[in-house]
Length: 149
View 1 (tube, rainbow, N blue to C red):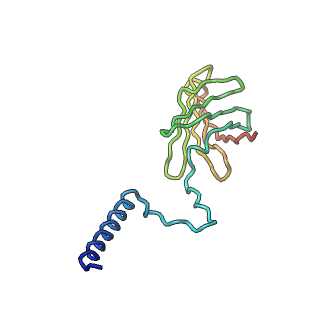
View 2 (cartoon, rainbow, N blue to C red):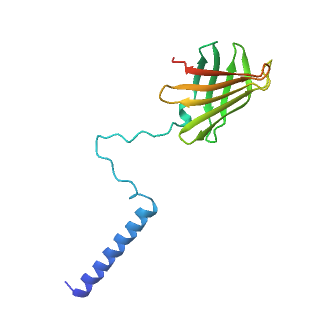
């Protein structure tokens, strides 16, 4: 073969390799090493909002918080029952480091300004924290357990 032809071909191959490498880096394909076959990915070290939906009951009185969904910003679609349904005027979750904190405020029927300030305990699948009863201005340590169906 012609020496000029071989040099041209090598140059084209190098150009193709450089282009593919640049594309792979741009697409972040090479950023993560491939996991060995048969190994599971590491579980996330922090709980996610996806762990919150469900029906949660406070064992000391049967009070129920039902979390239907959580949007990416932490806004909760949630309801309260004691035993009758009461709407939350505010229901949100925020991430504080590795902890998910929840805040609920009631503005109805004798509960005006009463709040729950809770944290999600992923190890025990609990919501625990403080209930502030605004009418009597008292705080109570409380926890909610998930109702399994």
